Length: 615
Image (tube, rainbow, N blue to C red):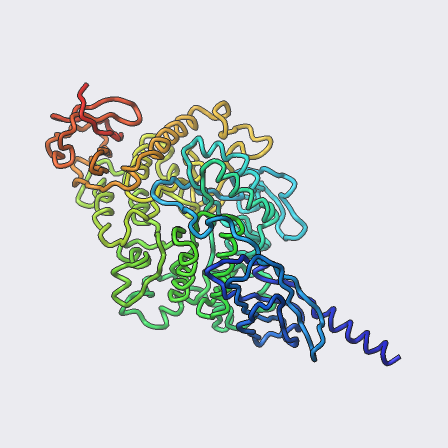
């Protein structure tokens, strides 16, 4: 009877202590990040000793104040693809085991090509683009169910919807796709945007499966296109599975508990800032429902590094966009960024640094001379040109130029390019998922849309288009975020307007689409735009002129923001025109001689490819 009781007790302990989670769920051999820290989670597993098979060396075992976690670091250097067995023992007796796979990497994975200035990035609000699989609109494993009538609810857009419309994007001239986050967000409401993630190793079931995400990359690559993941390092959602059982108290920034950021990112480099203001900016929570991760905790930082590397390798990704980059612990996020680019030397990462001053934004770009003043390097390859975006909100309604209004705003933006370590690796955009729609500011004025797209397509940097702009979609942020994140027409069964097809578009949608597609298809093959130098001229009469050029070619861009027709004397631009005789407009095909003057209609633009022939 005693033996039976002992066996029952032992069985109870063993079954009670089984592993519930392993993260990363598997890894890859031949990684630069070879010291792999595996997180095991299960009830009271810290009571057990840990060993591993195949003569793999355990470098470290970290147990925290929470007995439900064990962090085991193993050396995977020179370990071929294999299946490892982790043994959990008590008093020299194995209580249970856990299999763990080291998989083979893709060929030349380390040197994968990322996005750059040759690309045009298309930003998709994942829940609002297209519903390719109505069967996953709601899922029993997550709380919020589909409600398309609710502007802030789940509408059913998913990965399959993106895949179904990749040819539409390719025909538009898109070369890289940036969907908003796709990992699980189990908030009770507003989960559609997925920035409050509850499981960072799992695709939200309402978007599809992990395998669907891998397939998205494969389908993009078949078409010569790239997959950019929207990655969140600063925070998780308050429904993240760890929130009810944190590995350590300081896994999050606690005050104790919640305190909101003051949003003043300038405190991170302001030499006059108080310590408390700097702390509250960096450590405060973005909002109450988004717990702030403590990247200064080595366990947290390594968890985030490995999660990012795992997704790149697993899903065959081509780049990251990082949300709220400048709200992170700046030392920790620099280590995170460097670890990724050390693993993948050509991998591009653009950080959301939403500031309104070029020097402050330039601080965050890799090798910044401004950051170097305090010996800081973020290692972040790219930032977003929010100051250009700021100017675009109003400039095309300013018909009369003044010292501060009109195209001088655009000119002044580029005069500060000297602050950036790499001005050609900056994301340029007219709008995104957090701003008013461009076509809302300008009431769907097609001429003003043309002016903005001319600029975005031909200036230095990487152009980004927000879904639906190309068909004239508008939306007013003052009404709510749901209004700037409307469903793309035609993405749902039963939509009466299907803008994914030429036959389904209205005349207005077709007008916007045709211009966008022609412009960005032209740009795809123009190395002179991707990598050429830029010279610009002080605007006169609200007309802005700049050149993109190299040793052999030149493109002259003229943007007339005036409400009147303007005539330009070409001798002013002689240093760039040189021996070129004429220029052909890439949109209309019209040829313009360069020997005297050029006349341009009101609120219009010309993109002239210069050549040595005359009409």
